[in-house]
Image 1 (tube, helix red, strand yellow):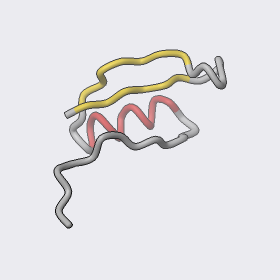
Image 2 (cartoon, rainbow, N blue to C red):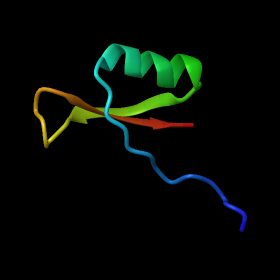
Image 3 (cartoon, rainbow, N blue to C red):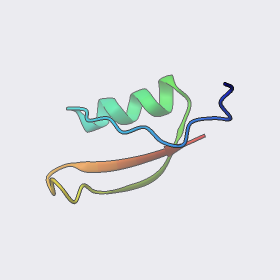
Image 4 (cartoon, one colour):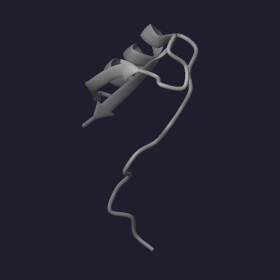
Length: 50
């Protein structure tokens, strides 16, 4: 079976800046949106896209 792509992936990371750097600088994704994580208001929910 062939896949047309990936819709979304969810991951929890400890350091928001390292998370942001990894996805934007290492993987080359762009930050689409940043919101407060509704389950934990002390953390962010990042949305990345290609």
